[in-house]
Length: 212
Image (cartoon, rainbow, N blue to C red):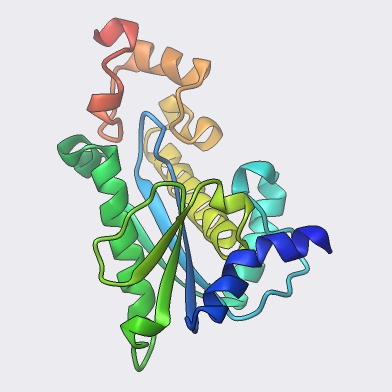
């Protein structure tokens, strides 16, 4: 009961402050050497879940997939994706913020009649930003403190993992389905052997011995 209250504190506070549309926003893929950064924006239709809804990093792959399926049924969501080319062009921070804007914009497109801006608040994990003119609140560690942000973290993570699994079929020599583009020993060894693929973030890979 205590945790249930804690993870809904920010949602309850937002409603008390007069916001009727509460959007949780989180990302997956800021740190990898390859692939896109993915942001999800989620409006929960209910706070009652059979699955564990928590910071995606605290869940197993099976728990995430089960939660993801339930979240899709019990939410309205939008996803923003910025690929490695954008990340290399503008840097990861800017690319992530662009993905936030895209995710929120796609979410709002799902409404037949868009909600009034003054009724919307974005609950943003960590130091995420939006250039859109909605009220926003940054919550450090938000994926463990807000149910809406936790749901967004799961959606972003599962979608990004699935993207990387598709890329694994195109570039099987790198093992993307296993490490999802993160700088594991296996991944670094594959890059040292095979060089960079079109999916690699050049600005992230300058430290790899054979490329420096």
